[in-house]
Length: 322
Image 1: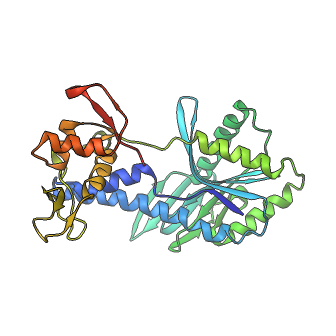
Image 2 (image 1 turned 90 degrees about the vertical axis):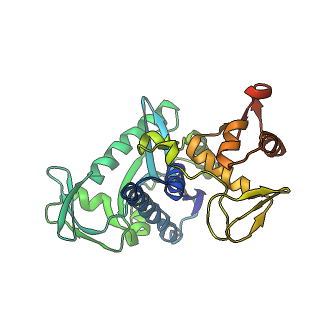
Image 3 (image 1 turned 180 degrees about the horizontal axis):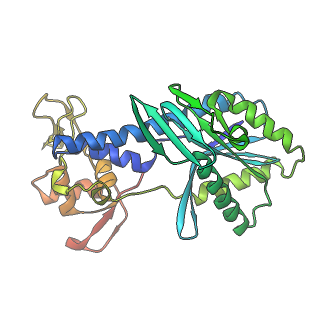
């Protein structure tokens, strides 16, 4: 087993994390943002926990790609994990949900019961079916195949209890707890004994999937209904955490704890990219870093050797998206 694309915190989750850390608005709004962030991080934790169980798969000609987001027609679709083998391809739809999970197959409904409350959630079986079709269409359009595609819904939370009284045979076939993932993959390989591809061929398909991956990049102000004025500006001290380090004699100095740094603005500009996008002018840099001098802002940007467009006062610098 080889993991080609690692499981990382998605870009839009990093954007929300930065928004939470710099948000100055009402406390109840910040609590709501933090709850949303916690849900995203729980999902990431579930996907990340797959790695251990994937490492238990003995077969060598097996590749894994985490978090692949592809453009299919007018819409994007995202697959939590794709397993590629020389015999078949497997979609893993990961669910990190605590509580009693009741799967009602006849009406394609998932109900979660937790803390005395019931909540209807999107049916993961239906989601897996939809992803199966979308990926098949995507591969066919690029003449990659034909490839047999299987799917599995993986429940990763140790606080999940499955109520399967209203589940049909299909559910038991394509849903499992995370501990069963290696066994399910072995079962699927036994169902597809014929080798259709060589290892270099599936590595080529994996590279094409990675190249086509388009991370979700959001306008956080629109998505979360936040005003730019509600964001902490300034360079954050890595020692005490306050915003608003002062620029003195070529260094950033914290007015609270006295910590100093020559590169603290680099982290601040990464925050700027997450919140505002990669394009920045001298004025925007000066404003976000809370600098009083145009010339200092310009020197800091020029020292980074950034690509730019325009001239003089109209110059726009292009920060890297990481």
